Amino acid sequence: MVRKKTLSPSGAKGEDDAYHNAHVNLHEDELAVAGLEIGDEVFVRVREDKIIIQKADPEDVEHDF
Image (cartoon, rainbow, N blue to C red; front, side, top):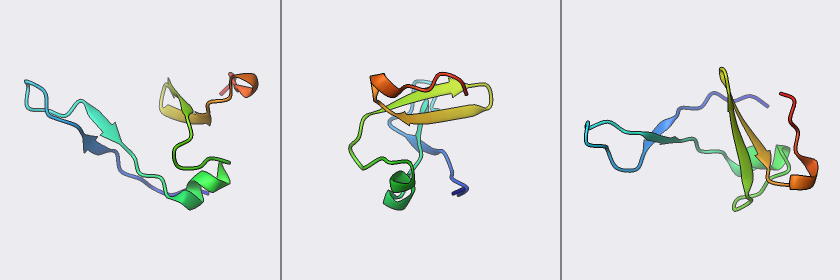
């Protein structure tokens, strides 16, 4: 499943009048495909040109992306 999303500004603006946080909304059907539910804890990894979200299961962490 692929859907184009927008990183939306989140939180208060900093002293420089710019946002420093963003969020992305995921629909429950997208979460279900990944085996996730609203409220689940996740690991978020940032790689060059990628953001990877994975269920926070320390026994089953994928390291090679």
